[in-house]
Amino acid sequence: MSKLKSIDDPAVQQVIAAENKTFHPSPSAWEDQLIYFLLCDRFSNGKENLYIDNNGNQVTNGTTAPYTDADNGNALGANTETWLDAGAKFCGGTISGVITKLGYLKRMGITAIWLGPIFKQVAALETYHGYGVQNFLEVDPRFGTKDELKELVGTAHAMGFYVILDIIMNHSGDVFEYIANSPTYNAGQKYPVKGFYNAQHTADVPFPTPDPNTPPDIYPDGAIWPQELQAAGVFTCEGQINANGWDALPEYLDGDFFDLKDFNLGPNQPDGFSPTPALRTLTAAYKYWIAYLDIDGYRLDTVKHMGFGPTRYFCGAIHEFATRIGKGNFMVVGEITGGLMYETVEATGLDAALGIQNVMQTLWQVPRGEADADDYFDHFRNARYLQKGSHSWLRNKILTMVDDHDQVWRGDYKARFSAWSPGASLMFAALALNVCTLGIPCIYYGSEQRFDGQGGSGSPGHGADQFIREAMFGGEFGAFRSKDAHCFNEESPVYKGIAALSKIRAKELTLRRGRQYLREISGDESSWGYPTKVGARMMSIVAWSRIFDTEEILCAINTDEVNERTAWVTLDSGIQSVGKVLKCLFPLDGNELNVVSQDGRMVVSLTVPPAGFALFK
Image (cartoon, rainbow, N blue to C red; front, side):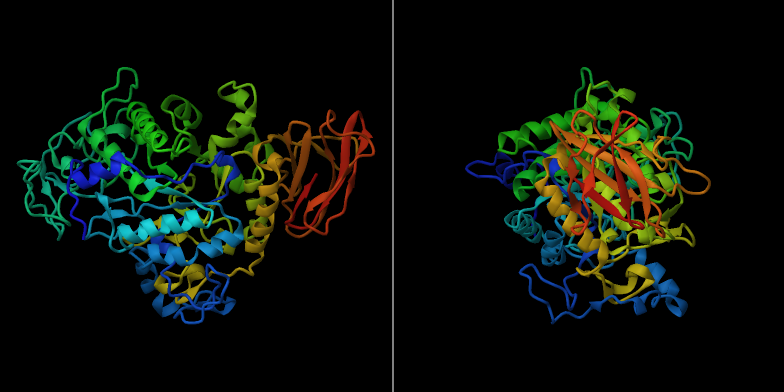
């Protein structure tokens, strides 16, 4: 086992120095990529049977059979509590398991992998998601080893992937105990600490450690590491954020994120900012991981709770370091809850923001017909925000997803897109909307298999989050309320649809970097307007154009999962002309469209099958 305990360890500093080493270059443009987000514990344990390996061969020596419809719900009934309990704990997915499924991702057209946090967690706790770090210099042994993580990145690079690592700066895991019982934030009051936890999660380790140069013999499972984080002043020690404090300054900056302990990173104001020791230590640790693993980007957790000053310092330091070692387009994408997504990107130097809250909500709702079309497309109209002059600025500033592992916009009841009708029927249409609109598209693991997890916080220990974090490899907490059945099915309709669409997107620059326009439609050749919800659902074609230079590509989905829909669709009058023919790119057997003039518009008559997607050029 590695014995790295300090940022000043020569082994750490030698890696950061990165002398005489060549690194994998950054992509020229992140908007060209198709990202896949997975949680290591819930993806693969490498024990699946009858799946296609990285070389295209069928594996016949695994122990877990493929999922079939007959497996749906086989973990419920008398075993329901076992299934629920398993979902709240480590399920057994591993880094080595991820390596075995790179071929599965490659054949789907994925080009970048976002790996959930893999750093060492508090040993006594079941923080399978990875966001409760106890050692920022080590990999959690439940996931695997540092060597396996390095192998994953190297193998991924060799197969044409980029790798993004999920990291946490705002807080650590639950590494110490207050004297008071679960105190809450109270106007900046500092609460005394009983001690750091030991390996058994008993708070008997001095807080802070008496001498950071000679810490007690508590490695690896006690206190927090590197040892610089054991010093006085590293934590804010102001108690948990209150239920009504998540939007209250400075509470959401200085309070603990539930039982996760808040680092003292420095003031929110970026002007004249000076980094704290905690911020310097964490930044150095993440420089180490860039150089050690040769990764290509970071997804930065809970940016809102860090503040502008610490975030800008971190982004500047990481970008400078990455550029120095030859990664000039190293991406730092931030998770930003609340209403300051665009402003935070501008103020902090983040490369992009996760399109959470309203962006994700409307991307989820529009293909289901639960919101007006412009509720989603208006997010990309820069005039509403930063007056950039062209909304193509957003092509690489937002990472967009239909499903994710948190669904913060849904409150205390989580549900994947396919959780209830008509979601499963419309899953591919939703992903096509995601992949073919502005932003950096990202697919959450299992969406390509129509995972349908849903649930709310019920009995103690069963939070709503676990229901949308099913184990793709099966085990005791498999998808579709099953057990012992894996879901790596390359013949599933959505998987095959993404594979076909990703090939087209890779060839078409306009689909990746073009401007974007929601198109007005008409059913009677005289009344024009954007698709809107009438009654319970919007049952309509939703059409949009991507335009780059002198080229227009027309995209459309049908939110009606039962009936095909036909509509006249407006095109760009400066590019199109009467008699021009648009060829169908998707589906492959689609008909051509003839451009005609109506009411001074260039239009085509477009028919889209139930829950379908179409693409024309």
